[in-house]
Amino acid sequence: MLERVKRFDMKKAPMRMHLRPLTWIISFFVTKKHKNRLVKVNMDGIKPPYLLLCNHNAFMDFSVAVKAFRPHRANFVVAIDGFIGREWLLRFIGCMCKRKFTNDNTLIWQLRTVVKRGDIAVLYPEARYSLCGTNAVLPDDFGKLAKFLGVPVVTLICHGHHVNSPFWNLPDHGVKGTEAVMTCLYTEEQLKTADYREVTETIEKAMRYDDFAWQKENGIRITYPGRANGLHKVLYQCPVCGKEYSMDSSGTKLFCRACKAEWTMNELGELGRDGGAVFTHIPDWYEWERSNVRKEIESGEYDFSCDVHVSALPNARGYINIGKARLRHDLGGFTLSGNYDGEDYSFFWPAGEQYSVHIEYEYLGKYGDCIDLNKINDTFYIYPEGNDFSVTKISLATEEMYKFLKQK
Image (cartoon, rainbow, N blue to C red; front, side, top):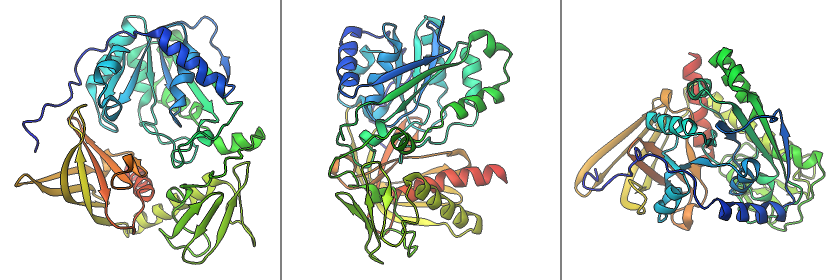
């Protein structure tokens, strides 16, 4: 399919970072606006090259990263949709392209090129914005990559970015007093003697965070009147009646259309409800949904299929509409089947190889929520039809199936 369409050149060597003064200026104004505070831990004597691993909650993450490593050069790993219509610019400032959740050996060698020439390799290993301000799953053997690169491993954990601009409610909520902690986990010498499994575990622990807990602990009040808008995209199952896909939100309210239960999101990001809130902490509700999905998987009940609309992104020129198709997600994995330009096609993503999946809410305002599935040379944005589904549940099911199969 789309054989005549030129694919994005993933093998092109990354350029060194240019326009550094411009990135510094943008970073200065963004971080000043939110009164960002940067703390450095174990960073004495740490200079490029090094591997910088950052958590991912909002676009502001990039400005804080520039502030953290200024005045040095760095190369960022960016998803292919970030290159649309501006490939030349992103390449010019040193960005490297990645199709999400694919095993891409080319990128590993590009990262090696970056550190070998003395620059900083910047990765967002969660590979997507956090859905509810907590850490997402990481690749199983990230320590192998760190050992292969052989340079210091540094993390940058930002706090306040999710509550300022949640993935499900993007407008700036005006949070001031955001924080970032930059920590050297391993020097080059320490990395040489460390087992890769230990390195993976250390990175996973260092990448844990909870933005709503941080908000409450620091007394950050958000008066934005629409702060609960879109929250039902993440919290799709009612904990009172148990019904899925019945949740909705407006202003500061989250409510169930089935049983009429209603919650209010206060200025500290907590949920309250007359008669008892069941969950007051948003990530707790999200993890409860995860546990329910896990039960479906363990019992063999999980099975989703739906008619979908599909857009392909073979390169950075833009999306190609390939029309209607059928998506199925079960314990085998994802199967996408359809017909384009008179030719039948079918793509399969095995559950045992798909540790997570990228989703979007109301993506580009076109067809609604979508699932982003990738092959090495292709990216498909898949929009389920109807209302009886949740891409959040599909995301949770992908992660839980991978863990279930791995444990078996």
